[in-house]
Image (cartoon, rainbow, N blue to C red; front, side, top):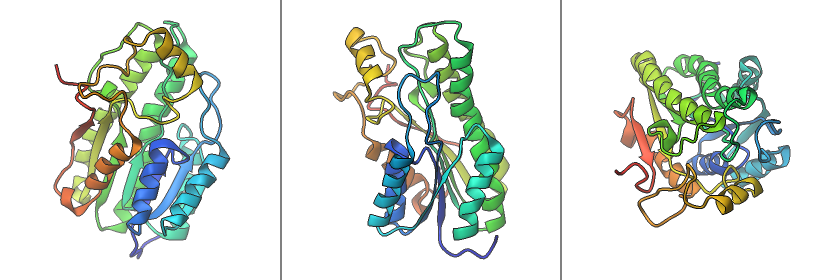
Length: 273
């Protein structure tokens, strides 16, 4: 589909947390939203994932902000399913010029060093899912012909290794989030001739249901100083979704038109030595 004049954004993991925050902020700027979420749990992940009701709440908040939204239930681990879901939004709104690859999972507090299934699930969502998101959207961005911005949500665990405890869970999370940086840099090179910019954002712990849940409460209670999410230099335990959204809004704006291949921390000083 070509000839779109409105701006169109694809956001994965859009049903709640950071994804919802990004969707509502972009919609407030008149950008049409294609919101993707799995809306189902993953057996190995120790906290509840988003639901269909969460995705509908995102849709309601986007509409309240004056925006248009197309929701689709798709698993980023399944390229065919993800591509079909995104294409259904493209049919409605036109080709894409913004992508926020936000879907991700974590399993801090799962100590098994040999949990092969957990390791694979984390890497499949956090790394392969980002690659699938790029693969499912890049042709539309190129076809649109007006350039654009891909923002890949990584983590400070994509830049440092602090918090490693030998478990499959922390190894998988750090490895997958480091891998997102490699994807970002490779994609920045691949799509620069089309004026498509690709950057990554690296938050410290963010106050979303990924961290604010019963499982993590037990982890923090048992080990308040030793989790992979502790260590912010500024006196805050977590940043808020809006803080990451502010970085997204900058990177997709004309003010960042010559910024590509950059790993941007939103870390409250987590990385300061």
